[in-house]
Length: 173
Image (tube, rainbow, N blue to C red; front, side):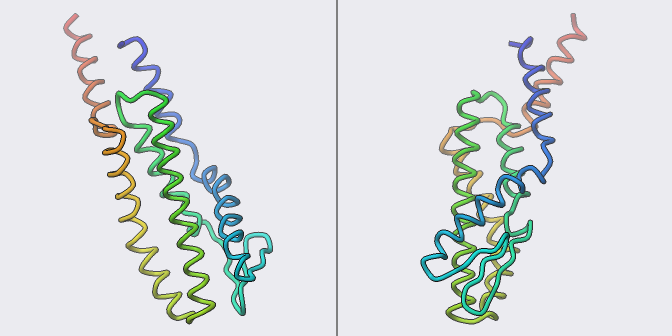
């Protein structure tokens, strides 16, 4: 229905402009406390945004939380044309859950590597994971979500095509 399409698209575009800082604000405590909960079994302690284990302390900065990756997934899901609200919520929920699980696993593994093996190994794996693996994992989540939810449209592009069709249709009237 053309009468509902444009207003709903406007709302979706507005939701795309939620600042990344909001994602960080919501996701930071979840990431930190889930990581701490697991590391607590290894004797870790927590002070504000810092987990300590053995002789090392690890401060969570914004990049550790990965709000930009969550934001990118958020925007991709929002800009998929012709999916129901419920499906959109499920895509965001499952995508965020998969990203959070991997991020917490990443934190836990890196802290344990630093504590039980070496800080140099921690640094090397941290750099590779941050520079390469995170992007590959995000792409993998997106591909999985598209497959699992049987998405047939291309984010943003299909909306653009529809808007051009509507514009051309109005010109011809």
